[in-house]
Length: 164
Image (cartoon, rainbow, N blue to C red; front, top):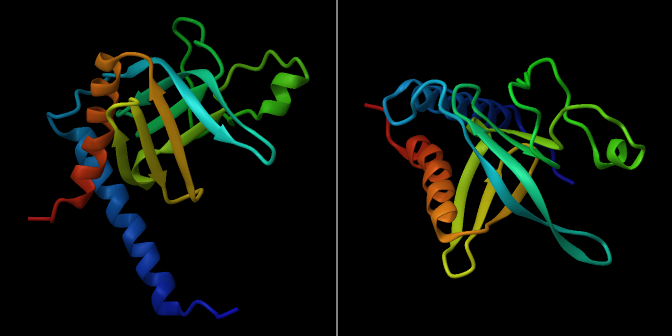
């Protein structure tokens, strides 16, 4: 296995810093209003070793925090998750009967590399750099699909824009 040189590490670090700055710029611009949070029920597709499954999930896109959170159900009204101090829980916590209030997964939007869509099936494929994962979400209605795909694509379009 080859070694990763210092130039490659510096380039990766610079790419991440550039994406983070562009995501922060998007959060501060008029295209995303401060305090606006997109939330709703979507299906999350997961492929396992022996089978694949779709589960209903509560998903929140919070531009002010720059996060996309996936919950097993709708959190209590007024509950604020802090991605810097609260830890996402695993499915294991749910199996153990934990009443812990936290999302199953939290993705940082500055690590969003690409969003691909399948309009006929209302699928949204969100490719994140770290962890190297593609999140597959399916909207329940055509209206939800348009809203979610536009909101998530805005982060990619902003990060692809050339600095002026």
